[in-house]
Image (cartoon, rainbow, N blue to C red; front, side, top):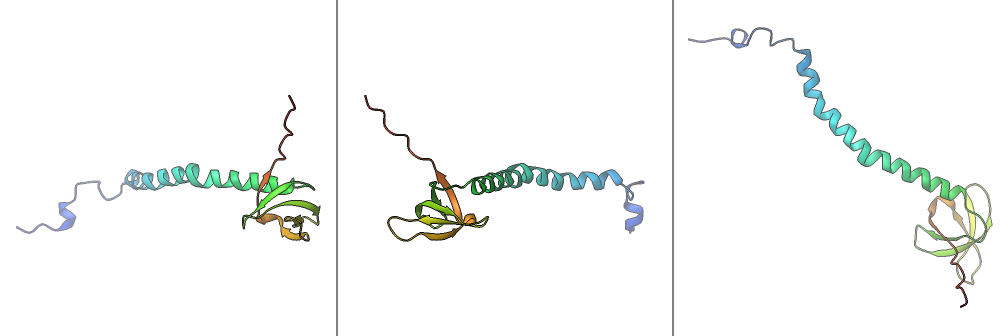
Length: 111
């Protein structure tokens, strides 16, 4: 005997709003996990980098994205600083390419 699909379904199985919510739950859970593991820490790193770049001042020792270490000789404007690498002429560097500000070492205490 042949049974059509309409008769084979259980009564009330066609309009399940709760089933739709349950099927979306894994996607929502994945989004929440991605937010706390990827998006939020990246935003915090970005904010701390922007604060570091905004606080650059003369005589700070910095490391550029290319790995060059130099000392800031002049703050040109909001987007550039002048950095001296070794004894050469100062070079203009875009602030966003500065990845690290190294603190000045404390002088050794004489015993």
